Image 1 (cartoon, helix red, strand yellow):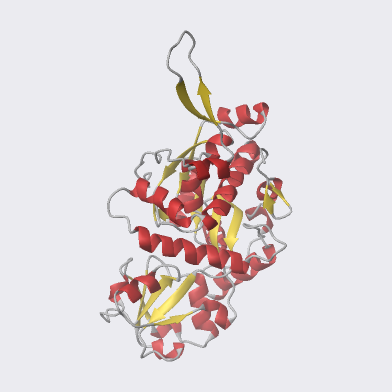
Image 2: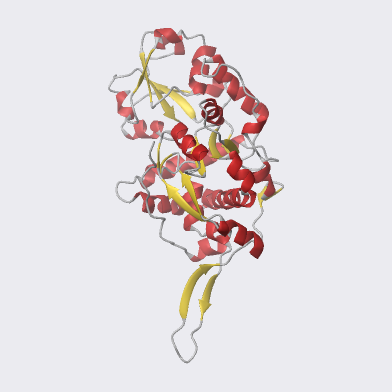
Length: 369
């Protein structure tokens, strides 16, 4: 598999508010002998010199998004951290590459060392990636509820009505959705499960009678089309799940702990900033995507997902926290659905130490503050 095409980093659009929030100081060098002063536009670091040099020595760090420059949790924070100067403030040179939506393929690139970080759809994908031989670990999980939902026409009044129909997905049937169907006693063998891509209009056109969705995406698109639908949520059937997972290579992480910590520090700071400045942050993603970016829709995606993060994060927990008991429960859905033969030991596959190292209680530690 080849790398996704590289796009240039976003231009540094730093308003006074952004600069204040980032605690970055623009340094001005005055020229002697009456020469005009020049602005260096360098960002003041917020870590000590030794740690800064350690991070710089690693060189360029490649992050592959889960899907293009969509304003989803775990993607938008990285884009904003770059644009706001947060990566620069912790001496990281981050190259952002747009992913195609093939998150397991992205995991393969991280496992091979071609990339260093990638966003995964959920913790189950960490298990699936490792089961496929791609060694990655989850280092943060922002959402602790399934992001996947199932959309049907209004004529589907219970999930068993789907027996004998066609269900469309984007690459594979998300484990929480299959677990929901199984939990409700649906005969899965009676459903024709097909790949249909990302156009939700296949549902109202009746090309499929059910469609896998991200609850922060397709429901909005269908509503904009004026279409009616029913949405089925896995948690209403006792199914656990997650979203907004950041993954890296375990060996590389052990060799470069400060890089992993400060990468997570920067995106945690950006998450905090973007919660109150969503329109600005989505604007940074629009700059990267160039033409054709639906800013209004992507702002809805961000607002929906960050609200789910807040709602699913206990008050005494750090945003991005990892709960291995929930991970095991999510992994069990893969076994129940036949997507895994056995549940692996999840502890080596998730490492919360890097995130915990850059937080004090539930707050991200930003040393200049």
